[in-house]
Length: 279
Image 1: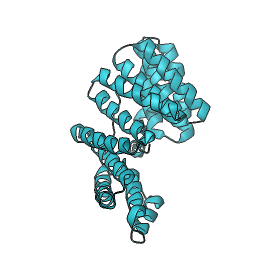
Image 2 (image 1 turned 45 degrees about the horizontal axis):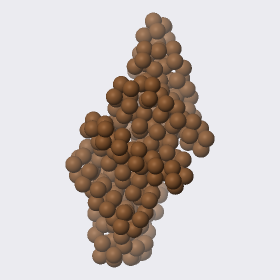
Image 3 (image 1 turned 90 degrees about the horizontal axis):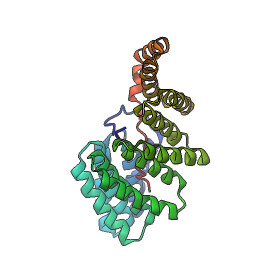
Image 4 (image 1 turned 90 degrees about the vertical axis):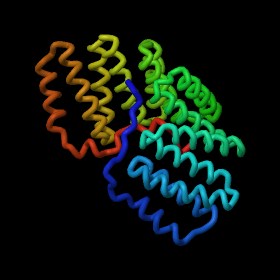
C-alpha cells in the first residue's frame, strides 16, 4: 500500500527533449527559463540528475530576471528530482521554498502542487497525520479550481494513507472516489492504479474474490494504456490472490506469466505521477 518512488529509468530517445535542447541556443530571458523548466520536467523521471542541472540553471536565470513564477517552477522541479532520489530533506526544503514563491504571486495551482508533494514526503516518511493534513488542504484548492484530475489524484493519495493506517473502509471510499472521477474525465492512468489499490485493500480485508475482480479490471486498463510494468505488478498480485483462493492452477499460470515477462517492462516509467508537479 505504500506510495513508492522509482529511481532511475533507462533513457530513451525523446524528440521533445531534443527539440527543447536545440531551442535553448536560440532564445533568452523568460522564454529560456521556461524551456529550461520544461527540460527539467521531462527529465524528472528519466534522469533526476539532469533535472537538477536544468532546474538550477533555470532558477539562477529566473532570479536574475526577477521572474518569480519561473523561479518557483525551477525550485519545484529541483525538489521533485530530490524526491525521486529519495533525498527527502532536500526535497522538503525546496518544495517549501517553491511554495513561498507561488504564494507571493498567488498562484493557486502552484501552491496546491507544492502542498501535495510535501504531503507525499510525509506519507513516505510514514508521518500520516501530516500527510492527511497536506492532502486535504491541496484537495480543497483543486476543488476550488475545478481541477478534476488532481482531485482524483488526491483522493487516491488519501486512500493510500488510510490503507497504511489499516482503515480499510475509509481507504476504499477514497479509492472509489478516485476511480469515479478518473472514469468521468477519461484518465486511464489514475483509473488503473485506483483499481489496483482497491484490489490491494480487499486483499488486506481477506476478501479475495473482490480483490480478484479488481485486479482483472486493473490489468485490463493497464493493458489499454500500454503500461506493461503496471500489468506485471497486477498479475503478480493476482497470482497471490488465486493462491489465497486455493485456485492453484490459475495461481501457477499467473506466476509463470510474471516469470517470463519481458525484462524491459521493468524499465518503463510505470510509477504513476501522483504528485502534480506541473501544477
